[in-house]
Length: 481
Image (cartoon, rainbow, N blue to C red; front, side):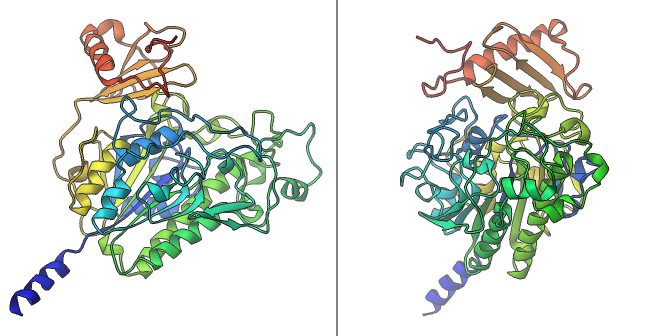
């Protein structure tokens, strides 16, 4: 009897921490107050930084959505990953097939690892790694529950007619179906006209926030892993009118008519600011739910983004300095496309208000979250950054590898303070640039001619780390028929 009691007490002492991993959609490095944003208030995320750690050199795996999500979940960089681009299963019409190239069933995800360790696992938000087929959804990749958008094209509309709820759907009766890519020839007469045509009653980001709160409330009795993938501030430009009106009318001297894709809006700058402010409010609601559940001290909260901000569809990244001083943005392997905000809070564990220059990437999160949970991590391309979170010494990568087969086709390597970029493999596969990120974070001065040692090392790494993927060939590198 005594032995059984001792054994039960030992089991009860194993309290695994909860994990909330928030990955925003297309949020730039400079779009949060704690990273220098001056125009858009982000008090909740800023508070998260003041109560924890802020990384200055954290990278997405790719400059677009689906590949980064694949690398996050599997711990593989893009030279090894199964998904390396936004390959679609259907078209952009509202009746076209949903979903992107599916994550293969054989892939081990961090969700499945944590689930085996006793965690309740939930995904709220955007999946982007498959469609409605039963073997393509989050529920077959380690998640107990899912609420949100399976297809990232459908997520272009923040007022969709429905959202997925596990294998069923949640009909949003206040919304009417419409194409998220429209253009008008002339401005509409009033704000109400824009709202009538390009919005609805049920704002998807609000529905996602509520789903996060419900998940946390229902997970009090066991450790939980919440992967929150909000669709903000990805285009289209859509926000509730009362949020738009919080920002100065003088910001917007003319409406956006949809000429660069997505949806028209009468106040493009104010709408974009409202979307980021709403995202910040959503993070605040998630933190309140954790506190209400009595789990603040036992919960690691991470906030980051999947790639840099996009300068299209009516977004004025220059006005907001969305990517800070960093070069380019979404769809580019220059720093503006892949260097992301990264904030983590864990009261009593992570030093308050700390800043880390540790170089890490989202594919390191697999090993990190496994270590946080106290479970063995399968081999991956990542190195746990838990030491850096806790203010302790942390093993560094020799380098971080990136590739992006779409657009111009690119490869890049970050080696400490240096960055090597092949910016146009399609037209100029031999072109290679080198930058000293410590003195030149804007990547304005190519020093390749001065550093033949780095060039030689980079050529060897680029060859070593790229494993051809027939579903996502790398133009300019892989042989094509």
